[in-house]
Length: 295
Image (cartoon, rainbow, N blue to C red; front, side):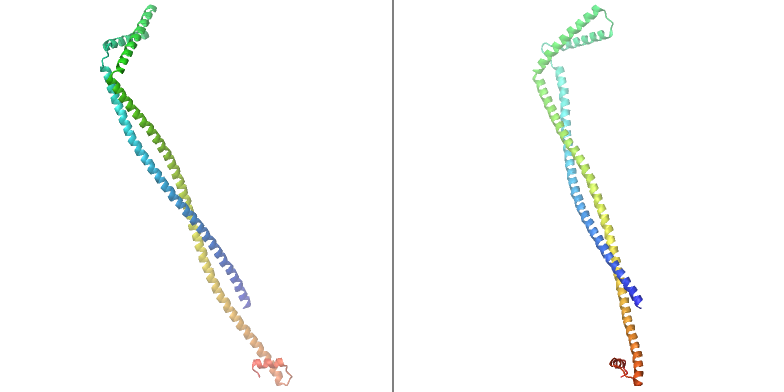
């Protein structure tokens, strides 16, 4: 009985250590789970903030794109106006007569100059004839230049031509100003696009980290739950073992008491026989007889 009781008591100590180990592992896993949950929540909050910031940048980019589209439409209209004005300008120059300039005579001179230049380039000429053609080309070139200069000077003072020149300059200036503005906004759009792409990449990386933290949170939560269940099981095993040990101790006490009582009865019987035979008993012997019920 004592050996069995000792074995159970040793087993109880082992189970107590197991209970303590499960409590320690459960609490450690719970602490890790809590830590990863906090990191996950912080990262999720950061993801939300980053997503809102990206939305603002995308909205800003869309506004700039819309602005560029409007400016491009305005620019195209200015260049369309410019093309029409240039067409009108060329027509006006062609139709405007300048005093002292015979347009038909000018065309004839230009045609003759072209003929001589072609002849010089394509025909094998003698020295005198070459010299003569060169002289004629130079002469015609100077005459045409003088006529054109005279015509240009007269045209520049023409009110209709001046008005058209001013309109052309205004349209060109407006178109070029819009082009500069479009280029500046386009550069902003490009920078925003790069920034958005970078932010989206950082957002994706942060979201992945948050997912990793959530997976670790789940893992340690499950570990904590398993350790708690194992702790409950070990605690129940310990309680059941305590009941067995208590029962064994009770039985051991009863057995020991019974053994003592048997020894007492045996000793008392022996002393009572001495007493009946008239032998002298000590006070202790008499107490044993009394305790055993012989006196």
